Length: 196
Image (cartoon, rainbow, N blue to C red; front, side, top):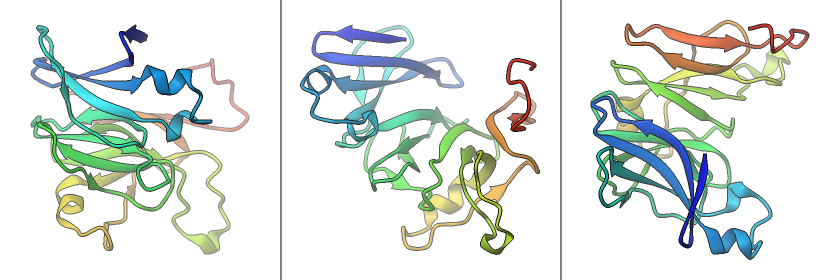
């Protein structure tokens, strides 16, 4: 859902913290869209904010001219993992739940999209990534990967960890249930997408 509030365009793809106390949402400058300064939404300024689920003043978490999107809470509520075009490609980033300087988690340019963070700190995401170049397999559909958040936060940006592929088939959507089981939707090119 998208709302216009004053001079802001608010995209409500709400992501509530595990406790239910705080909601994540994205805000863009409405004037920027009206002026058509950007040809693509990816290059527009879209920032992540939080607000208490009971209402009150919103807190801006990210401030960057890039497109910050798809925020997800860590189970402990200490971090927010999100996708951003800060480095001219869609990568995963993490920021303290109270704001601060975000830390880049991935850099392989596979249009990473975060879905969830597991209780043991694994970021579950999709990406178009070719793991083994000599195989000749072109990543025409996304795969589901995991990345250890603590390891990625501890690395410097020149030595980020490589993700681990989670499922043996092409898949483009995933989530983690309360028991920690990863649920995903696979993709077969000749399959009817409305069958599932």
